Amino acid sequence: MSQTSLNKDKIKFLLLEGIHPSAVTRLQSAGYTNVVTHDKALSGDALKKAIAGAHFVGIRSRTQLTEDVFAAADKLVAVGCFCIGTNQVDLEAAASRGIPVFNAPYSNTRSVAELVIAEAILLLRGIPAKNAAAHRGQWMKSATNSFEVRGKTLGIVGYGNIGMQLGVIAEGLGMVVEFYDSVAKLPLGNARQIPELDTLLGRADVVSLHVPQTPSTANMIGPSELSAMKAGAILINASRGNVVDIDALAEALTSGHLLGTAIDVFPVEPKSNDDEFVSPLRGIDNALITPHIGGSTVEAQANIGTEVAEKLTRYSDNGTTLSAVNFPEVALPEHDDQHRLLHVHRNVPGVMGAFNRIFSESGINICAQYLQTINDIGYVVVDVDSEYSERALAQLRAIEGTLRCRVLF
Ligand SMILES: NC(=O)C1=CN([C@@H]2O[C@H](COP(=O)(O)OP(=O)(O)OC[C@H]3O[C@@H](n4cnc5c(N)ncnc54)[C@H](O)[C@@H]3O)[C@@H](O)[C@H]2O)C=CC1
Ligand SMILES: O=C(O)C(=O)COP(=O)(O)O
Image 1 (cartoon, rainbow, N blue to C red):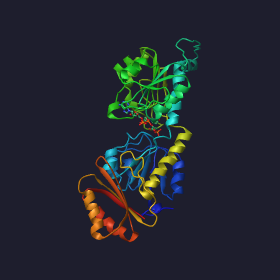
Image 2: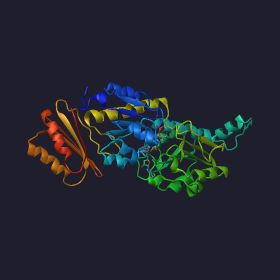
Image 3: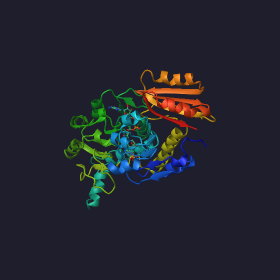
Image 4: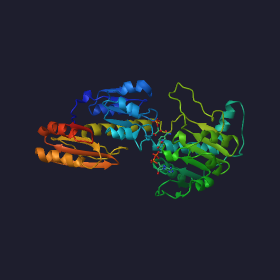
């Protein structure tokens, strides 16, 4: 088993938000036994208190890791988002402290795609409204506004990992798949990219949103986009809550312009399962509301637990940053008998010159060197003979522009 310079039982992992136990199992099998778990998200002072002293933190979509929280995270080495979205993390604040952030880009995509398909079928049949009425004692047996999905057009906004998978399943059900994406994408099957969002909205019977939360997607679907949708169409949002203007959507439903909606994510979501859910969609029968559970299946959560725990242990064990979302990506081999120095720095002229000078002037032989940069962050890794690492570490830490430097045994 690989070694770290700090004893593994001293390396503290803090896992929040009920991350699946598969993560703990994976951490323990890699020798990391100091794992503290919480069922819920933490915020404010409770989060700062819990994160102080932790070397690794694992969160899901609810925990907000802000600049303020990073300032309190005195020992933090890396962050694991046990989900896809990383908008809850101030990625720049993390990078500027030399902290890589990892996520699980694939493990829950199928779960979201399956949910969306189920919702499209239910909504085209008017099931949410019929179900709500039946609970009130009303018998709504009727074929009016009740349709098959076969032959209908699915408009996917954001043709990434989820959108593409959704398109493939939808074609299997006989749907016509069209998509809008801000970059050119290879269409799978018979899917077709539509260059303008409004054009797609005017053609689709079901519109499903699969974009990340960024400034460019905030209120992407507002009053004018809702008007651009076909009368009697359906809107599904399992991406992020601020992508849709929820008041405008409520209006489009009550006016009868849209036949129905399925919304899994909201501009404001309850902080915990004990808090009340407040939304203008409450009480609208043809709005299928779910509590941000698009990725919440046993399969997805178990896979995510293993996947992200694996990324954290690889970073801790050997410095590999493959699939970090805010950090230079370096895939590293094992470092066997040598010591490995990891140096995170500002990517500015002079740092690498100073770095290499230290080795040439002190006569320390570099056995292997790896360098990668992204934006203003540089990450250089060198393997050296074990007797030299402590001396080199002290000198590397003194280089101007150094954000973080550590050694792995
Ligand atoms: N409801 C839930 O439980 C879950 C929600 N999600 C959300 O779904 C989002 C999408 O997930 P993935 O498909 O894995 O992401 P992805 O990154 O693979 O795909 C996103 C796509 O959106 C496109 N895009 C970005 N900005 C755009 C814009 N302004 N206009 C048009 N297209 C734009 C990108 O080019 C990309 O093709 C995640 O970021 C996350 O927020 C993910 C998993 C579970
Ligand atoms: O994967 C994502 O981005 C999600 O939105 C799922 O979030 P969760 O892990 O269910 O809090």
